[in-house]
Length: 188
Image 1 (cartoon, one colour):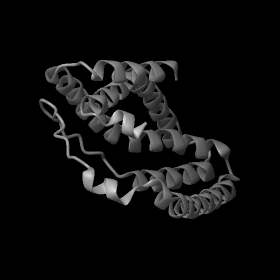
Image 2 (cartoon, helix red, strand yellow):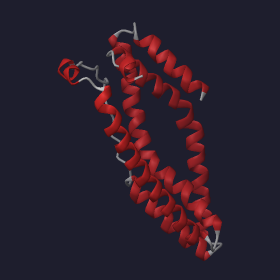
Image 3 (tube, one colour):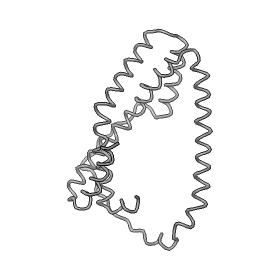
Image 4 (cartoon, one colour):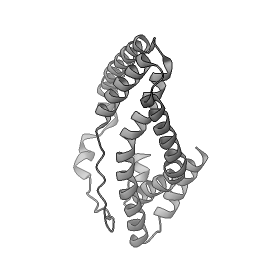
């Protein structure tokens, strides 16, 4: 968390005076890293959720059903609360005449991009993880159970070696760009 806060502060500071080429350099990194994250997130879900459900054992189905019900209800509640809060507060916070004064800013673009499509979308990964986890919980010890735990180790290693160390640079790039184009203070 400390590195993230430092990355935000440095991104804002450097964004005030950085030349366009350096902003584009970090935008290029952010573009590639963002593609990697999009690819990795479904794998992270499958790699961490599947063994967690499998390790619960025979009661995994009931626990999963209760967890999904709680998550669904809390999502509906949060959505309704957000809507009501926005409907009640935003009209008094936004000056309609200011909407006409919004200027478009040309943002710098990355030097190049790399497309890394995910193997599956997030919902597919979640359903696959639930299905495999429940199946493995019912089967008990199996070769697939060992493979899932090995995959979990690979995912944890990927998070430790690639995602966590590079995340502050990614966040730095986001705040560098927002400051460079003059949006950071409005957003904050």
